[in-house]
Image (cartoon, rainbow over all chains, first blue to last red; front, side):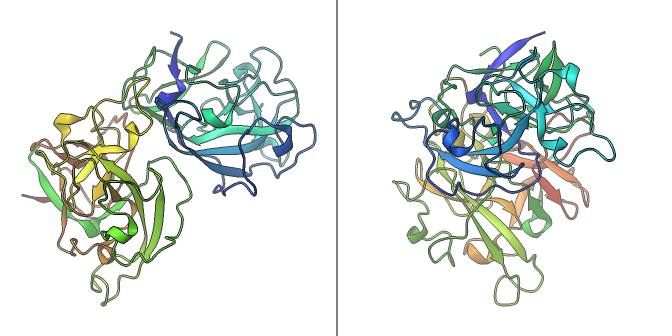
Amino acid sequence: MADTLTVQGLILHDNWPGTPTPPPFPVVNMEAAAIGHNIVAPMWKLGTKWELYCKGDAASVGVAYNIGWSTFIYLKAAPDIETATAGAATVLCVPDATLGAGAAANLLYVVVADISNTTHENSGLVVMCLSAPTNSYYGWYWCGGVCPVEYCPSLTTASTVITDGSVVASCEVSTIIDSDTVGLRAQATNSQTPGVGYALYVDGT
Amino acid sequence: MADATITVQGVILKDNWPGATPIRPPVDYSDMTAASVGHNLVAPLWDLGTKWEVYCKGDSTYGGVGYNLGWSRFIYLKAAADMATAVAGAVSVLVVPDGTLAAGMAGDGLYTVVGSSARTTHEEMSVVAMCISTPTNSYYGWYWCGGVCPVEYVPGLTTASTLVTDDSLVASCELSTVASTATGIALRAQPTAAQEAGCGFALYADTAA
């Protein structure tokens, strides 16, 4: 059953390889082309991570929002990420296609939103689009910590991620196929699916 | 189960709080309970959620040879407005986010913590920290949140200090959090069929009270 969770209620685990660093210069807009977002040639190495502090004050997104650390990762959009289900702000993405022995070196970092184009929807490697990605373009995605609303003009405190209606307060969440896209669910009993974060409150709110 | 205890040497905490890259402290951190590092102050010296990572030398000068060495993490949090009420915060008491976190909550809600399971609905979320001294209501300060227990940086801790458990711990088990019988926050062995996240590891079994 499809449902949603406002992004304030989600803390993401960063399961991707690598430890983040602070950006090499002050950043206020993670969707800007000037920092390498949604551009045809990569400005940073695939898998680069930045960590930013969300102040969550009235000057940013209002007091009713999480403060704290957010992690971003630099990834490449799949060549068909604009095809249904298309990437867009708040849409969850996972590695594209099927990662097999001898896969191209960058394939782990090529992501897609449509689960019919991947076999890795439950790998534990999940990110959220900050904006609508262009096919095969490089850009930043949210992968850890609190949702970085104040650094993403396409996000608001009312933004939501898709869930399956099973999310309860304080539960660990994992991924699940929800229609044609990736959603979040309360971690299943006896699950071998990796956890990808925590829900602070029930979905549907 | 009845409450039990485990000495702090036996617990490695997994840091489940937001923020992946704790920094080395920018000031003298030999006593993490000192006001000079921002501990137990009415006004915060650091941003909530700030993390510091320090190395515990674990030698005879610091905690004795019978103790873990290695990395410890601290996080800067705010004590709940009723932190001093039973179950009151105190050194080695576990804390979790206060009250009920809901859509539209205040920005600092996640980082306001309490030691009583009766005043939170997040006692099993495994986002947990440990008091390093007795917190004053609504004051800001440092809490242990990851790695080995930082005995040598916390005057109120000794190698005999203990954490509350539910008497389920076995050697090498993963841990999660649960309400204690005494309505505090306790550690338990990760249950079979668990849906909760783990918050650390027990190196050895707990001891019945």
